[in-house]
Length: 171
Image 1 (cartoon, rainbow, N blue to C red):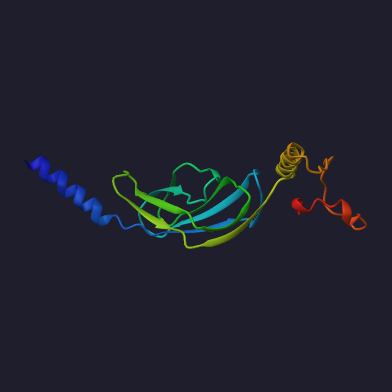
Image 2: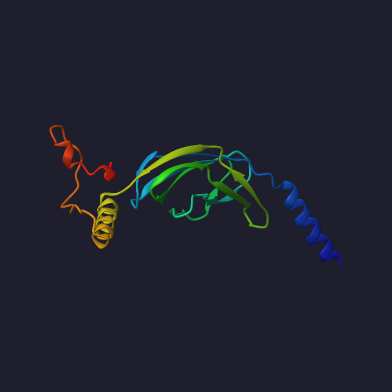
């Protein structure tokens, strides 16, 4: 009984001592290309006098892929910058900051802290995705007997180009 009482007292003490204060700040390019990796940098700062473990949890829109960093140990007062990649899908998005799961050194207790930031991302289509959409659209038109235009290649507009030959869906 004495051992159980001591163990419970110790666990209560650990819980009362666990008061995490971690700050985070994220940077990411706001103009991205669909299907290409974008690097997200997350600066973490431990503001407590205890060692903590931090796991990053991203809240990204559906279809995005993310390669999260492993759990990081922050010593008292330490600051670290993490880099991880995000693979976006086409569109315009408002993305909130990631959630930081801050755990005590023994991983008995944790607290979730959200990084205060909202970033507006513009994800542009890749040239390959545009070519595929034009090919599919042309195939649909051919099946319906409508006029088709074959796209040999796509490139950026250059001054002097004839505007009759611009693929407007690609702009």
